[in-house]
Amino acid sequence: MLKRRLIPVVLMRSGVAVQSKGFRRYQTLGNPVTIVERLSDWCSDELIYLDITKSDRYDLGRDDLAGNNHPDPLDILEEIASRCCMPLTFGGRIRTIADAATRIERGADKVSINTGALQTPELITQIADRFGSQCVVVNIDAKRADHAWTAHCGAASARDAEAWAREAQDRGAGEILLQSIDHDGRANGYDLDLVHAVATVVTIPVIALGGVGAWAHLRQGLDAGADAVAAANIFNYSEQAVLKAKRHLFEAGANVRPPELAHIVTEAA
Image 1 (cartoon, helix red, strand yellow):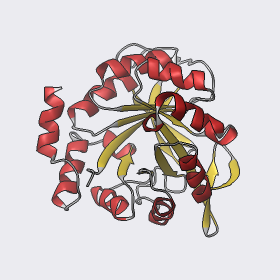
Image 2: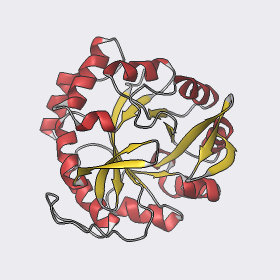
Image 3: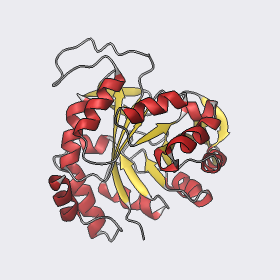
Image 4: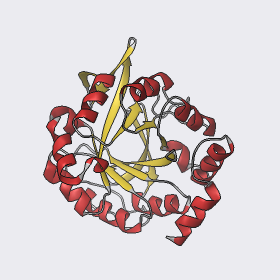
């Protein structure tokens, strides 16, 4: 059986790493380039960077962040990739096959597409045909609507999240990054009903995201059907947080890489 994965997520907004709550409030955390080194040292299985900037260019307006302040997200990606010791997924403002190609050329192992996929579903197939399904992660931001969930991309898309996950798989997606808008930043755990519903209707891996506030929530996400569990905010405020999370999962009987072995492998890389 394939090992389950633990994946930190870093959100970038105008070149700065931020913490998100409900997709509406953002708290500045620091330089996204320096964060990758810390997460590499903490035995993460993979790493996901999501650029949630709305404008085409960054205007940082500040010089107090450690490291270089790049006005171009692709420059940030290139520097992140040069320091990353694990598979790297990069998402944000990918609308065309050229956008995806540029990010892979600049160092991403996979690309995460959300709005671009909803607006142009054939983009999933185009990227999969050129780079392979293993490079295509379809990000579904889902919001509960009565007894179902709607896929969002800034506003509701009127697409049922489960049906959209099935279509994304049929079009060539290799993974689904499934985020609950309702649980984002609330530290009350994943939307387990959402995770189970989507994991049940697809055969490709589902990565659960949104709401982790305790290590126990990670195991709950795996038990609900996720193939990998991801989190953002919880990893920013505790030293060796990813290693602690991995150890918790291992000791709870989850099928993850032993944390000590993972740490050794990371150091050797």
